[in-house]
Length: 323
Image 1 (cartoon, helix red, strand yellow):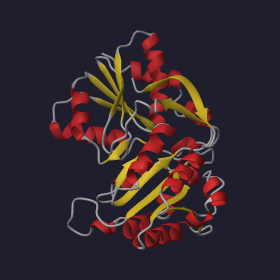
Image 2: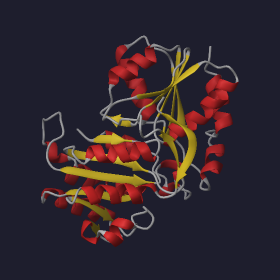
Image 3: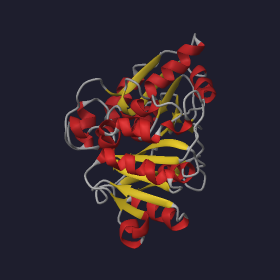
C-alpha cells in the first residue's frame, strides 16, 4: 500500500525540499521573481545564497534568465505562481526553455530547465488572474516537455529529485503551506510516466492527479462507506504518461471518471479520453474538475463547494456514474 496510515501535514514542503536538493547538488540554482517568501524559499536564500537568484517582479525574465543559467551548465529551478510562470511567460517557456530538443526530434535534449508553478488551479484564493486552471494543458502542448502534477510533498520531492537529471523542459506544479502528507515515502517510488494504484476494485475506475487525487481519496472513503466498489489510480505525470497503464486500467472497468484541479478541457480528463478513443470501444469517461468558466475566489473549501468538488458532492456525482 502506497498511502500513509496516519494523516499528517507539512507546513512548508518546498523550503526543505529545495534546501536538501541544493545542499546535495551545488550546481542547482533556485531562481525567484520577487516571490521567494510566497513560494517558501527561505533556507536556500538565507543559508545558501550563492544558489539563489532573484530577478525581481519580472516573470518573463525569470524564465529567460533561467534558460541562460542552464546554458552555462548549471541546473535552474525557476519558481513562481503557476499563473505567472505559465500564462504570463509562456512564450519564454516554450522558446527559451522548450526548444532545446530542436526541430524534428521526438525526445528531450539539451540543458535541463525546470519551472515550478505554485498555487495552481483553485489552490489560489484570488480570482481568475491568479487561478492557473489551464497550465497543464498549455505546457503539455510544448513538444517533448515533461509535465508533473504531484499529489503531496512526498510525490513533489521525488519528482524534483528525478527531473534534475532530465534533459529539456520540465514543469511541475508545486505545493506550499499546510500540505497533507499522504504517500508513504518508504514505499513510494516516483518514475516519469508511471501511474500508481491507490485502491483496487471493480466496476468504477477513478483516475486522478495532483490536488485532484486528494479530493478523489476523500470521495473514495465516502464511496466505500456506501459499498460502491471502485478503484483509484494516481497519475502524477501528465506528459509523457505510460499510455498502456492508463489503457489497461480503463478497459478493466465499466466506467471511468477523472478528477483534477484543472480545467476539464486539455487536462487529465482530456488525456484519458484521448487514450481511450484512440483504441476505441472503451468505457465511457466522465470528467470532474474545474469547469470551462471562471471560478470564484475564496478559501479552497469554499471554491470546491461552489464548483461541486467538495468530497460529499463529488462522491454523489461519481456514484451516479455507477451502472
